[in-house]
Length: 500
Ligand SMILES: Nc1ncnc2c1ncn2[C@@H]1O[C@H](COP(=O)(O)OP(=O)(O)OP(=O)(O)O)[C@@H](O)[C@H]1O
Ligand SMILES: [Mg+2]
Image (cartoon, rainbow, N blue to C red; front, side, top):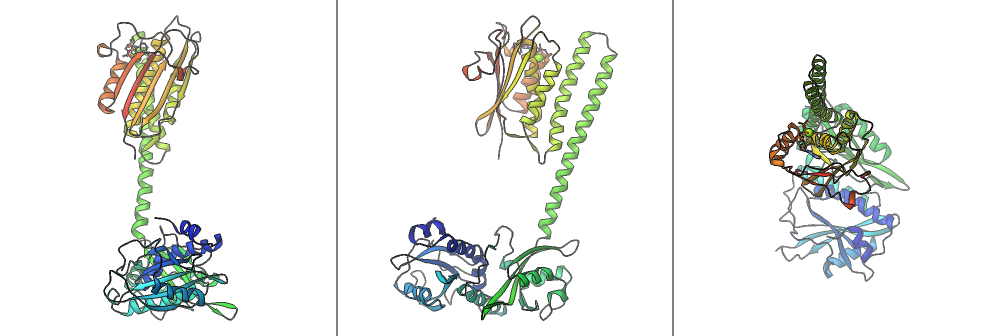
C-alpha cells in the first residue's frame, strides 16, 4: 500500500512542511476516529481537481463501513462536490453519499485541513445511522470532543507541530478518557478512566472537581495547558499503581490569541506492564549473578587442582591435571562473559579471543612460534551452544599446536574461522599449517581424551558434525598462514544454531 508521502509526491504538489503536518495528523487520527466512532479518510487534491484517498483509518470504538482498502481511490461525483466545497470554502461540509456495500445512505462530514494560510487536504468522517452507536452519555461526550478537534483542524490548530502521538506508548481512547474544562475541572470520565482512578484511591465522583483536588495527573495537565501542546507523562500514583497519561489541550482562536478551552486526558493503567519490566530486570540481574558465581566456583576448583598438582611427582599426572585446569578455565571464561552480558546469549567472538590467548599463554617453546588468527565472529550464540563449543574449540586449538607443531618443527600459524553460510548453521574451522595428520589417522579409532571430548560434545550436545582432513590450506587463507611446515590439518565443525 502506498504511503501518504508517495501518493502526495505522485498526485499533488504539497510541500514538505504541509506533508509533515498531514503525517502528524495521521499519527493522531486513530484517536479522532475513536472519538467519532466512524471511518475516516484523508483526501488530497490532484492537479486535475479530482480528490484521491491518501490514507484511511477505522475506529476501534465502532463498526467500519469499509472492508476494503480505499487508498488510491478517487472521490466519486457526489463525494467530490462536498469535499471540494470544504476545500474551497475552508468550512466543514456535511451531507449524504451512497456506498455500494451499504443499503442506507451514508453520512459524510468533510473537514478542511488547514496548514498556515491554506487548506491542504480534506479529512472525511463517514458513518451510517445503522453502524452508529446508540447515543449515551459517553457517545455524546466523545462527539463533543470530536467537534472541538474538528474546529481545531479547520483552524490549523491541530495537529500540534512536532508533537505527534507515539503510537507504541500513547494511551488510546479505549484505555480511559477524562474530559477537562479550562480550569482542569473534570467534565466527564469514561468508565475505564473511573476504574483507573478508583485504583489510585479516587473513589468520589470526580465530575466537577479539578485534577489538583483529585490528586491525579494535575502537573501534566497544567503543563499541557500552559504550553498549549500535548504532554505525555507517567505517574507512580501509588506503590502498586502506575498511570500513563497523555493530556491534549483543546484550543480556539479568539481574535489574534489562542486560548485553551479545555482538554482531554487519555489514561492507561500500566501497572502490570511496569511490574513485568521490573521483574524482568531483576531476573536478568539474577541470571548474571549466577553466572558470576559459577565462574568463581570454577576458579576455586582450578586453584585446588593446581595445589594438588604441586604435590605430584609423575609428569604424566601433572600434565593431566594441567589439562583439566585449562578445560575448567575455558568454561569459567564462558561464564565470565555471560555474567557481563544481558540476556542468555553471547557474542561468541568475546569468548574465542580469550580462548586463543589461553592457548597462546600455554605455549612454552620460543623455538616454535605460533601465530593465531580469527576470521569472522560467529554472531551471537545461546549459552547452551557457546559453552560446549568453547570447550571443543579449546581442544582443537590445543591439538593444532600439539600435533601440528611438535618438538622439532619450526612453528607456523593457526587460524580459526567462524562464519555461517546459512542462517541456521554455524561453521567453525580450526586450521593449522603444521605437520598434518598421520597417514593412518582415522577419526573413529582415536583414543585420546581431547578428540573424545570433541566428538561427544559435537555429536550429542551440539547435534553437529566434525570433519578432519589434510589441509590443502586453500587460497582464501593463504595470507593468514605464514611459514609452512607441512600440509597442515583442517578441522571443520558444522553446528545447527537456532537463531531468532
Ligand atoms: N591438528 C592435528 N594435526 C595432526 N594430528 C592431529 C591433530 N589433531 C589430532 N591429531 C591426531 O589425533 C590424535 C588424537 O588427538 P586427541 O586430542 O584425542 O589426543 P591427544 O591430543 O593425543 O591427547 P589429549 O588427550 O591430551 O588431547 C592425536 O594424537 C594426533 O595424532
Ligand atoms: Mg589433544
